[in-house]
Length: 76
Image (cartoon, rainbow, N blue to C red; front, side, top):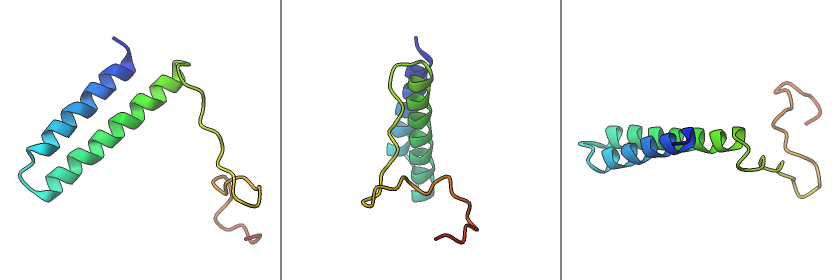
């Protein structure tokens, strides 16, 4: 079994636990855990070469995302 499949099974288990959660904070915690396991599974698929990397998001003016910009950059 591939590592990403194990991660997806963990995500599914968290989803089932969320369905039977006794209260809202517990439900939200399981949903966050589910999302984290799915993110790990997707990243593992990428690391294994099964999916191509996500393209950079391009703004309407043609500039790439500011994700790599320093927070104190005065150019903004």
